[in-house]
Length: 600
Image (cartoon, rainbow, N blue to C red; front, top):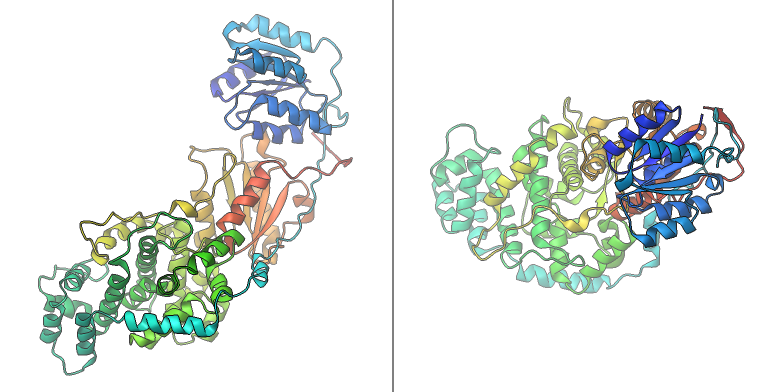
């Protein structure tokens, strides 16, 4: 039975032609894009390709060139059925070896069948798969991928851009200039004095109308509200409590210090203060949402800690405006975490800077400890912060989830796993989905309560366009993981898939956290492929394997059937984009000369 591959972006055209050809005894496959067609050709070469010239992702001329360069496909006949009547592409197709050109404007069923029949009157050429019979398909064998390189090794080639003394001098100068506003300092001093009555605290709040307004709004927000709305500052202070009020006022005062004079920056090489604080607020809302589900964690403390978790980055950006953009550029171009690049180039990272400044501003030690350790590996949190393990985990998890959903931008374009942090918190029914649900709306609502809103300021964007991947072709991922409810990477991957209702996948992303999960994930992979409707996704689907070592792989007998690559977690947006494009562009070819066969 002869096989015809139809390539046309119009589903109705494909369906009609398939029906006509099957009625005449042909085996018919169909594809809407060139990339999909190449995958099908690689799996099983057809006897004839019937294609439109222009397709959404490429054109038939480039497909014909690819066929000429592909040893296993050179004997495939190509016939054009096209709307394009322009002479140049048609002549070029004929020069490339097109067997026939038919115009859709002159299409009739009888002439179409006559043309197809005439093409098969002579004995069909051997299939481009090395002479396999129609009932037998060659088994393609792909190379085992090399382990992913560790991008952080590139940091060893970079030299610091200043000395420790120069860094210390700049930070000391900044500390002298960046004291908290006098009304805020007096208010904090009064809160610290045990004999200060609530009425006095409320009176001091009135001295800073901006802070007072925000305290009232936040006291009536969903984070603090417990029923009726408060109408006086005294009631607001009572509702929040002096301990939490101190943290909140300090946090609001610090934010006002850093946002009053700074607008959003539309420059990829600089740290955007508005996007940074939007990210921080998103982490605060998400972290406090986590804390409400975790016994023993105070949501208000978590809120303040997450709100200030990246304050050190703003300090670094302001103390060394000519150097910090170089740090950002290096982190982005190498695809490494920003905190590691800071430590290499500036001899300190933003968490250490945050710790020093927040201690100087007299914030609680537990809060400072949580902020200083929000980037450490989850496995080390219990050892490093035994008293505040859950506080650190809640802030770290909120930060990673907000990175995954793309709220604001901290300047760090790295996506990190979240399963271990969920494991530390040990909260039943806590999941990525439950935290993300309604989160963006909650963040939008809280933004107006926390940030200054001068009439001359441009409304801050909630997302950064610089942090999104750009793919060369349509991206329809199939994501496979052992813990979908706790895997924020999966949420990030699927959120960047092209908008299309129920698309057939064209790439598989597999998160292999542990070597012992390989067999279970292999079974999930094969089950998922078996459920796909199109033949084009049942074999030779490109696979990207994510793991913390960059080398945990599916079993060899399975991975040899697919073009594949490794990627180390956490990963940068840049490196994910590069590997996906490499796979989608078909740059990994089967091993030539492989002679194994599978029955069709």
